[in-house]
Length: 597
Image (cartoon, rainbow, N blue to C red):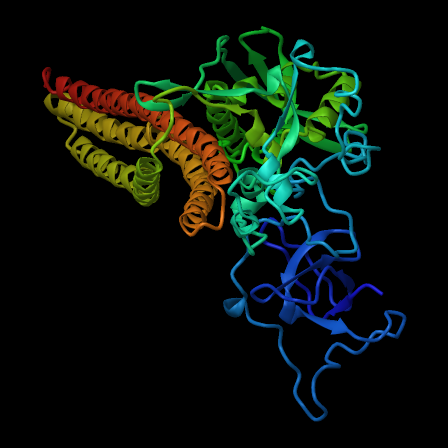
């Protein structure tokens, strides 16, 4: 029978790949072996993932036995134990990966580590979601073109059968270096082809979850359509994504509160107007959330910009709606600017499907969720420069990636510091500076009121001028309070977007580093005479594909970073100049009041 465990305490999941537990809940385990203090299993609600091993008790008896008391595992005469304190909670693992062989539950689609948040903000509606998943569809995990080869399909049909499996890699599974039934080459040795590059034992590694390991080791195979090809070209700065031949932009405007179910449910809808269609569509945050999940799953070596954070309360407040719209506008700009993301079918469906056509939306949604070019197959879609001089020096690639890693670390630290400084300065302007200037203004007004007690006609002009000076300082205080919305807030919005990008790159770099490790291992096997050169060259060729894509993404990041920060700093300084011009104008107006005294 399947291994089972009972939850001793409540546990609330905090990271992707974890599942929540309820006290006394019975879970099914995929394995009794814990991984750094975490177990893998399925809870009573059908959610599969990780949970702390210390929070459950493995059941040795049949599950039909009555549930034990909460502290049944405490020795007689013992104490009432408290749940393990949060300070001792094991470090959160990377997002959940498909279970190992032997797990009694069907695996999720490969690479499906992203779990869209389902909080109270813009919850999914029953009538919007279809209950079927990729795993539920008949034959969804198999090839979409089962009779392709038999029918003689080829380039004419726009689909290409690509595989990283060579005769050597296939034959090695049969114990030899070639296909079964074929003789060994003259002078070859069975021992030479018996060595294989070791697999990563950490199934939660990004390199494994992304499909990078399976691709590099030659285990990817699938059909690639013309529309799925992602081209990397050599530009003046090195590898670059091929530019979108039909660039476009998309505005996000007029967030409006709408209702459904006769007013029982409210939500905010945003009007999107893509420039290449000119047709407006309305999308809710849940649509953005769904799209982000699909793209983060599909593109393991592309930095998909993070969405503005969800919020459970105050969702309909004007300030929050305005701030979210600005965050979504930045997100949309980065999506449209990326040569790969902008042309993705799921993104185009998101931009162009009519808001009122639920059937068309669901069809496009299912198509995106059944996309086979994810995981290891995604890397089959990448086309890189070929021919003499087009290869990459792996040592140089490693040096560039290490340099970028150091850059992102420093940029992240600096962005955090600037964000903290800007936030503190904005707070001082809104509260402290406004209060201080208005205090000065009040003092001038008090002086003016004192002078008015003199009742001398020749002093009336002075009294009025001093009173006006007090009003000027009041107005300057208001200017200080309003100014952060004009200059500092946009800077912090940009920093938030880039902090999301910076959080993506450790995983992207990890995929490239993992591929490079496999190359080094294969070269060592060749030097030791344990692996044939052809097989090692295949591993290096596939590592080159990942390296080309990684460097292309790094170059794109630097390109948009320079564009965005140049534009934002220009805007910041322009707004600062306008602000101080307004302050100067107020002071000059006050000064001129004394000319006629």
